[in-house]
Image (cartoon, rainbow over all chains, first blue to last red; front, side, top):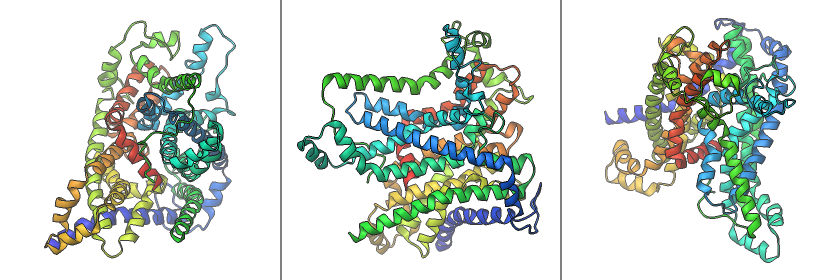
Length: 290
Length: 295
């Protein structure tokens, strides 16, 4: 009897958790090859959903946006986080408070972040209106409604939300640089700038890779933030793959194509995660051999 | 590497006084910049719609409109339902609290089973469970829709609790398994020789060592589930929606005649639970963030 309770306790949660990952991935992948529209149906249409999705303007624009947003968001967030970490590493007074301030946006939902930034960046009532009201009437900051610049408003909100997280990882890295290494460099007469560029930063790059991968993963999955900030607009200017999936599945009632788009999203994600996993494995093996 | 802990002090390479003053000034300015969105929404939450329309979203309240909070909480109309955000906040709480507790407890047992009990196939099943951390939600939307319909939980809070519990297991199992790896295997072996079984070892040895990781897991799950939007908006409608989905509906509902003061109050109230958790458990929040993200 006790044996049975034991097996149930161990296996039911694990099988539900592992099972849904495997089953749902297979299920959605299978649906991407069916002619499902409003309801899932069986049948086989080969790659037709994929060619249809890849052929839509919606998807190609969303993917171009993702490349731009991904690059901008990842690089700028990582750099901001690194800058904050280096700053805090100078024995700044009140470090605990400052750290909490830089990190608090991470505790807030993307919906809240998107909503608040949509107000701040709205030229009719946000920063532009404020500056105009001060008397500088020619001041323009209307990226939110500018097709070419709207994607950068998502980047701005994203940096605000995630840079504290990058900071936390970099700061932990900075704090674990060996003191002897730093002392040796200082004895050799290295100034603060040389110390960072030659000794400290080079030892941080495994963390930098981790930060990049995590942020890239964030970027690929971005949905709520855009939904709340721009709704994908103006036009399709801030459309991203996650929104396209939702659009196909629940607004256009095309489950087959939505599933194909979801699989394409997953493949994009794997394109980031698999090389990273392989690289980590390689490093582990090498460390084990040394 | 002990990621997530920043104990110890940095190298302190910069020592001369003017530079240090400058560094402090930069730090304070940056911190102020990060606080601007919070300050703006807090101030707006006590400004009237007319006042905001006349000036801008950014400004000091001339007359303190505390009534915004009462309106946002209980009177405001979202899609023809004039109940304020109160029922949606309650929905979020009714989903978040049970799902957080369930996923944390089940994750602790699962993590213990994988790391210390070591049944055949534990490495495989752990690998599959952690894949759930990475799998995009979009891959699960239609399957969940169908499963919820077939078990009769469409458009119910119970359905959301089930989803968040099962998906949350990916994170909580990962947290607990990694944490329990530091418990010596010999301790478990000795207890087994003394005749202790699976449950007794968990209750007597593992659980007493667990509070730190249980706190991390609870905070992480609470924040994640409270802030979740996609499932809320996909699997529930109308008055069954959690607060994140209701906020978006509210913004859409008042698009013609925005009530920024009241909306700001609603945003503040919606963000308050996770901000409070962060304020009091920030240290653990960071640990979860780094552990969940890096491992």
